Length: 279
Image (cartoon, rainbow, N blue to C red; front, top):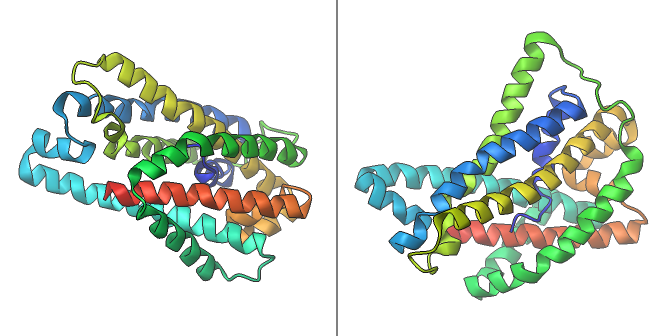
């Protein structure tokens, strides 16, 4: 589920805030490891109770507490949905050579996700079980082809003193919150598991499943953030077409880059479906 370029846009923020690539990578790894503890714990609650994750709030906090959790869940899902839709639209725009407007690309991504959702959650899960392999391969190629643009001085930081402290705390909070926000749906994958399943097993597998793809993609975002702060040409692509244009610009040849962009859009549609289900 997490094998998607979504976190690239979040990882970019470290260098954008003025942090070095090295600092950004360290913060990405540790904030992800810490943030994943929360959804890993909440995931252990669904199998024993037989309740989906958001319904556990009703059991734990009562009717009014559950309303607050529900509102927060809506806000989180809107945030994820907006990010996925915008980056997906940027990718379609870049793949079309800017012939498709960004607004149209966003609508296409949302419409495709909405259409697929009518086939049911089981179909989405079957798609997940194989699609992540293809996306992983494409992301590995993205790493390799983008490496030629990576900055040579990975320890250079544009901020110092209190400014650097503030940038570190802000970036840490963003990554932590992004990973921890999966607590609203982590347990949904275990609701049909036996009630006596080992809680530590569920905790460990969930934690690993969150940390590995999040760090793999988030660190790629850190390096690409270093690219746009040191490479004027790539910065131009980023300012003109956003993260989607940057991803396409780091791939070659252009036909291959456009094909990868379409596959990335499908992965965004998949995440969008999951967030729709969580509502």
